[in-house]
Length: 116
Length: 114
Image: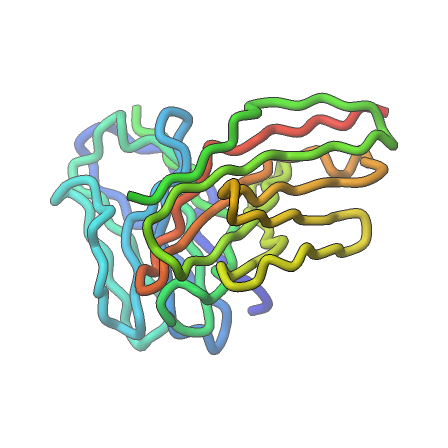
């Protein structure tokens, strides 16, 4: 597609349930990033992929969060046993490649997650 | 540690006014990259500009201009003759060489009134 796409656009879940968020990067982009945007914390980096490898997972807030990328394209962010503090907008971005910070990251529309 | 400060939380102007959004950054690296993104009410972050630390030349793109000053660690953004469609939250961000992570400021909400 022309831009980064994310699904679902909105997700409401109950505390304790698992959720999966999906990101489809711009065609040809090898690097993929996940961020979280919440009122209290602003925009926070979670993890990035170069190809199918995740060299930097430093932003994942707990071991309930995991992400994978297969085929160098689509990525899934999984949150297990969701908590109310996980409520946020989860943003995905992609860039041509990971090159030490200089590449522009292009963002998708986000998934708004609400944990009741 | 890297940090980006956008001291202006909200700004409100009347259409056709000029407005400057401030961004101050902190980094110990000599090589780094600065970005501005726009987030309209629809929610998607839209890329506006990228500068590297070795290029202090100011840039103009239509009604938008950016003033990068290493001496004051600032990368300010000016909109000339603002329009209602400029209403959005604007984020300044920094990445250090070797890190793929973007560190964002808290954002400045700009409202342009007709």
